[in-house]
Image (tube, rainbow, N blue to C red; front, side, top):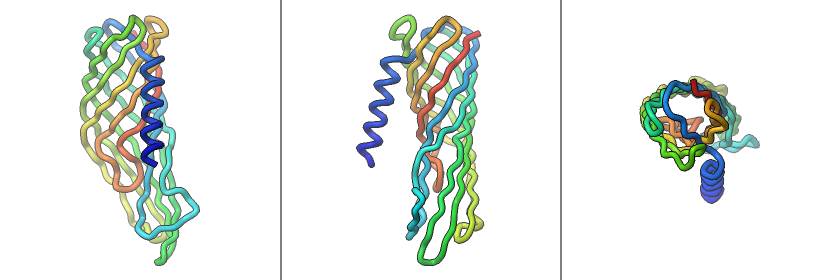
Length: 193
């Protein structure tokens, strides 16, 4: 399982670094994209035909301001999607549903590689709401809100002066005890004003 994660991260990094980035001077921008998020459920003694972990697609919107080719500030909202898990234990059956979304505000530093390609890193704060609901043995389970460090590394590619494509690995605060894990992938497009 760990080898698959490492291979997936390496492929994503190489793909991002070889084809994506943007070197834009200054001004405001907005963007939207999709996220890929890992979910994991750990119910002691559970057996089930359902997979207790997996990935779900979500959506993201963001906006920011480039002060120059290097420094920017960015904020955004991500809907991480939802995932269900049904299980069986010696004590009975149950199911859990997780639904998560979060906000972030971060400083961004971009290093231009060419006039169209650049790599970037973001660091800031994230607030994530992890909603949990359950049936059977999981009746009464509840999620929580977590605030923590937001961090991201990625790349962007300028199609033209106004439109860029982005790819990044994002870390949204702390992982939920059940459900969404903190680190995921995001692919997007941004429009520079």
